[in-house]
Length: 301
Image 1: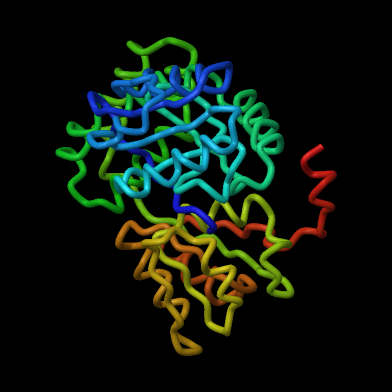
Image 2: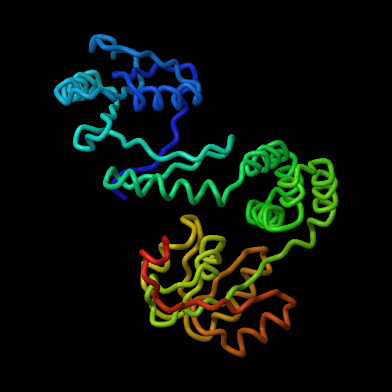
């Protein structure tokens, strides 16, 4: 990563915007929607109490002066179209309050970032913000009902992947709330699952979307043989990475699933492992792992 993505709480905090015109107005408006106290200034002497500074002035020399003054005051600064002068880059933003999606190309291609934003806006309707608010209102209640973090995550995944999220997206919150009540009554039925993902020749670029999703949902990733570290990096950051001895894999995945964990077993789904899972009554799925390589430019188009 060239830049670390982070979301700042700017509510009631001072941010200085230098410059006039569309770019300055747009950035000032976005900052104001985030709750910042936006000051439109020309003088460099006002940076002392600011938490951020933005320069959208057409005068290149003034942009250099703003960057120097901000750094002297230890205030992070963004100078529009001058990544060499920036402490942070301005992302393309998709707003689905309280969901916010930011896209950055590290300043290399703002046009590409905007195109990606358009695609995400089409894929994520405004109702997703209402879905996030619905889940947020229930978070404490679900935490009390399901104290175990792994089982709680499985519960929320079942909510977002199933009928309840569809009801909220269709503006049928009352029905969704009743469905949540029924789901919490049946929470004891929540259990683990094992997904077999064959990584083929080990090239992470050829993993299918289904395999990638399973890795990102996994509580534990089990691989008996050496696996490309780039594939393991695709799993959730807090997922366990386990390398059991040959002959113990079946017992391990059964034990993990019995404890309510979602497990990805990298490698071919062997008959003895599938039998052990079936005998234990644990759900499992064989997920196509490797796909034919695609042209990334065509994929965007």
